[in-house]
Image 1 (spheres, one colour):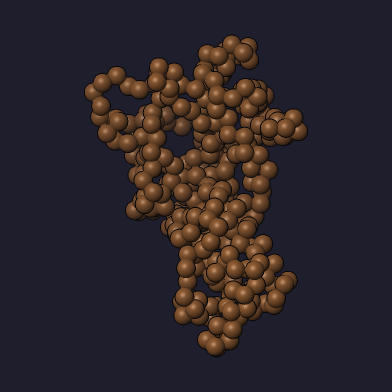
Image 2 (cartoon, rainbow, N blue to C red):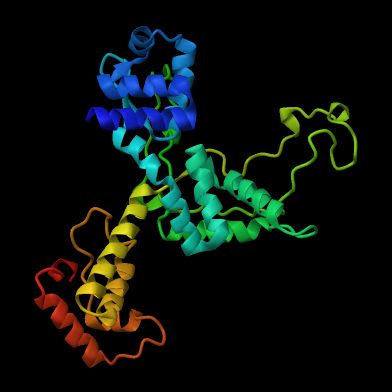
Amino acid sequence: MTQAEIKLCSLLLQEHFGEIVEKIGVHLIRTGSQPLRVIAHDTGTSLDQVKKALCVLVQHNLVSYQVHKRGVVEYEAQCSRVLRMLRYPRYIYTTKTLYSDTGELIVEELLLNGKLTMSAVVKKVADRLTETMEDGKTMDYAEVSNTFVRLADTHFVQRCPSVPTTENSDPGPPPPAPTLVINEKDMYLVPKLSLIGKGKRRRSSDEDAAGEPKAKRPKYTTDNKEPIPDDGIYWQANLDRFHQHFRDQAIVSAVANRMDQTSSEIVRTMLRMSEITTSSSAPFTQPLSSNEIFRSLPVGYNISKQVLDQYLTLLADDPIWVSLC
């Protein structure tokens, strides 16, 4: 990385997480992969503080770890991921335009927390939306859940890798660090949750709903807490999917400028049909027939099949757009 990029990473880490996390993160960016004790020694930071800083960085996918043959765990900074924090506002705004305020807050919570369970996201977002509503109105958990499912269906949010159950049942000594895996077919599978409830408004700092001071509230033990319905299933924002969306928008705009609005709408339809079946890094979309494209054009877009075929021929003959076909 250039010195300018390292300085930018430093500023981003300090702004989002504070000086200690910034110190550990920048050290890893400069030195590469290192074990815990070496990081603590080289930075002059206590082991406890290094552990906490690494927990934050791993939670936000800014640092990865690897277990070597000798059982030593080494940590490595994900520099490109740190720089992507600059785009967080754009990710959030894009979700707002596609999925309204509910989608916006879901992605914002995932970006702020790194990883969260779906139930935790739904409750946080429902509470935040309820705060903005008129007195007497609340946001239903089910409505937030539906938006979350739509975000998963379109791959804007995805499951995080987790520890396989077989690893937990191994009677031998625990590994120095867990091995996280994810089945590709489960990456966007939303657990079936029956989240019943509504968002709650924040109470006064001094009194609860009954008007009693906080000190008089009964303390509850962990035994009284309700079990988390999706415990262990964590979600994160899929940044590659956002970048794919930005790329597709740029392509559609370029087609409109070079040809006309009808051509851009045809290309938009092709890209939309392939957005969750084609890898974000793939150079081509999935093969699509003209009949499939014709059936998928927006309702009310009045062009005949013959006209569509003529536009597809023009696009295919143009060397700039041939890669889209």
